[in-house]
Every structure is written in structure tokens, then in C-alpha cells.
Image (cartoon, rainbow, N blue to C red; front, side, top):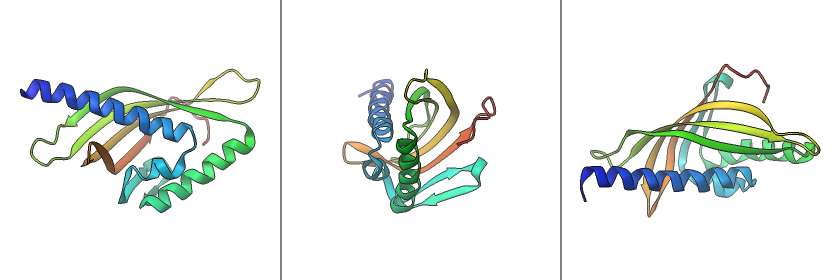
Length: 148
């Protein structure tokens, strides 16, 4: 397989990984979503000055958010765009990616609205035929001021 073919296949594989990963998040499948981080993986939110370490801590934080949204009757959808491969891992076996995620939110009888715009950088490690997140940094774009 040529380098160009390998890069194309890697891009398709990553698109599939992120589509399923974000679907789990939107469906509230907290433990399944957190299981796609390494056991000691990091989830970093610079604006919140928060670093969550490990699947259990990551899942706990997400579970609280999911419960709050469910109680309020709100639904969130994450839309991924502009995925780039920053480092294809040819030397290390790991991959570094960057993408934007728009978070759309709606409640009963409400029109969907843009809740948040983010810039996400991941460091992924291979795991069987898929990936695990070693480290994710989520930066909130300053274009929106809606509180989380």
C-alpha cells in the first residue's frame, strides 16, 4: 500500500471512529464513550482549568452532564468537521488529530441552536481495529458565550 493510500484509509478509519464515538456521546452511552479513552487517558478543558484523568473520572463528569440535560429535556448533538491528521503516526504507531465540533442543543418545542463551537486535539493509540484516546484537549471558541 502506498503512503497516499495508507493516509486515505487512515482518514476514512478516523472518520468512522469519530462518528461512532460522538454518537455514543449524543446517545448518553457514557460508559461506552469513556471506554474509548485509555484507562489512564486525559480529558483536558483549558477554559475550565480542568483535567480529568482515567475512564472513571471522565465518565463521572459526563454522567452528571447527561443527567442534567435529561432532567431539563435537552438534547445535544455533536457535529464533527475539518478533521485533519496532524501526525499520521508512521514512526510511533499513534496518531494526532485535530477537528472542530459544533454542539447543537434543543429542548421540547425549541428550535435547535448552536450551543458551543470547539477545537479538539486528540492523541490516539491503536486498539485492535480501532482507537483509544490517550489525550484530548477541548478548546472552546470565543464566538459563543453560552455557559455550559
